[in-house]
Image 1 (cartoon, rainbow, N blue to C red):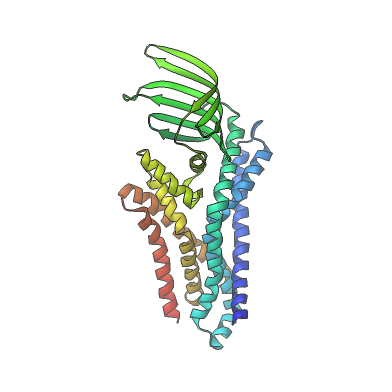
Image 2 (image 1 turned 120 degrees about the horizontal axis):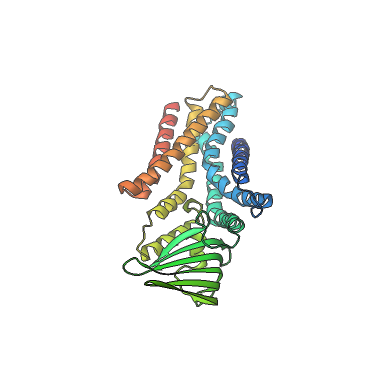
Length: 353
């Protein structure tokens, strides 16, 4: 039985691997075309290739649930097409045993997803976004199409790029008073983090004094802020690309600043429950092979898997923002598609048994 389980697992994993390579390759080609339109004397071809290389782990992580579903349909479907599943059933192996044999590699994929999402993707995404922002901004002052915006107390802060290790580039700060009148604006070329705070270099500041302005400059300035390199590594990339621990700590920081943290809570629950979502999608894939897709072609199984996977992703993408607007908890928005998939899978398997 162990040899049979290894055989089923190998079929499923090999199919998932092939699907991942195809989907990732197509996505990187489309991304290359999109980035190539921005190539100039600063943002060169080598910068684009560097950016794509570091984006690859994040895209792999994002496509893993879809690839798990389609790979399960293809791998297990090939066994069904070759009548191997029929022989297994005739030999007295129950559907439950076959499902468990498929779930074992699915659990491995879910574990890989957790490790990638926690340790690989956040770092690679930060390097990718920072390298692109540095190449495009070229050390200039405010360029809002690149970098990140952040608000802290009465300051609005824009940072062109954040390097791993606690170095920032192009720091623009706008300070307002209680009447929301701007009192000063400053720009610093670079900043490094120390125990006392951020040490900004090449600082230029403009103070607004009623009917006149006062311009000053300094080679160095100490900026005390609640932003740490860890928190900056969080805000420089999209919430979905952050680590679970980073999302949790940043939601606490936003709460301390009196800012809305629901968007990051939604990303937190999406990442926490992604392994469960992978298992639910694989369960649907197994139930389809034993049910409605028992005797169809491989191409039809791939089309069905892509449709189900896209519906699952789109439902999560729609319910997530809807929860922020309507007001129900992001946990519920994340759980609904997973629960529906798991329910459909159990019902179809029960009918097949």
